[in-house]
Image (cartoon, rainbow, N blue to C red; front, side):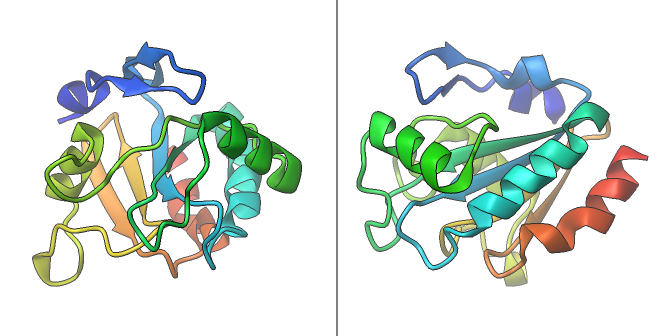
Length: 161
């Protein structure tokens, strides 16, 4: 599972294509984000998780998405500026993606397959759905947008122990 996941090409916010293999043996918190969403303040808590746990092996990865209520209308530069200026985001951000439908990014297709939602549904319901990936053991856990990043501390602690 992790080798396939880590080989999926992703485009960074500054336009560089890379795979996630540089994050092998790390814990990944992959989040579909948006700048004009009721959950947007979660950026601050995601940054806090990144600062608190990055030296222990957690990488927070943000993937802006405009599929839900057109809440991420900006281009890459606007997204970067918004995140830095309003929330001090320094964790890696990637180019805007789709997470559902025919044009869903392969990373999210993989994550949805590995960690279906409530009652086995695959579709992502809204912005700020979180996937915690244990790359060492090939496990993926999905958390709803309502589950705050702050509430993931104990789960992340156990994963990094």
